[in-house]
Amino acid sequence: MAKVRLVGVDTPRFHESRTLYRDAARTGRDAKTIVALGKKVSAFTKSPVGKRDMRLEYDQANAYIKHGDKYERRLAYAYLKDGTFANAELIKQGYEFAYTRFPFIDLDEFQGYESEARENQRGLWQE
Image 1 (spheres, one colour):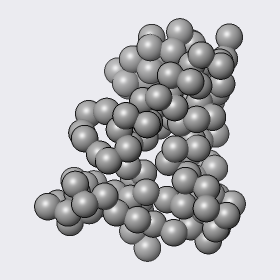
Image 2 (cartoon, helix red, strand yellow):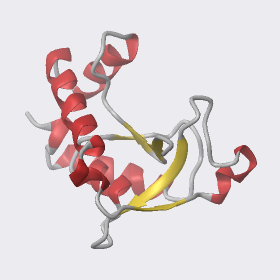
Image 3 (spheres, helix red, strand yellow):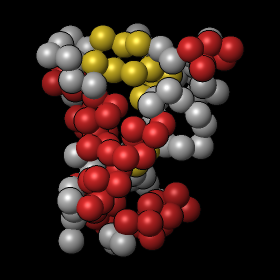
Image 4 (cartoon, helix red, strand yellow):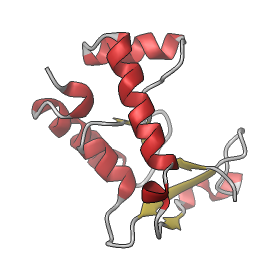
């Protein structure tokens, strides 16, 4: 089974990198907290709970690259059995950033979910 990169989401880094410190700066959280949240999100998405009965859908904006990235991951939207849109839910709960580097169909909505998570101090944005 190929690894999946969720379209439109950017997971906090949990290893030493410039991106880790960028994530810390943009959230106002210390690097240790970002690492802990990054590990929590990664563990969830790799767990049987995170994978249970997940349905993947592809964004046609990525068809020209055959829905894959340079790391050979599938670029997809994930939906849980109960219909929960996992990509959006992770941002709504404040555990992921909206990944805005490349366009995708739900870009505006994801940016709104991140703003709402910030305003309500969820996940990464907690005081």
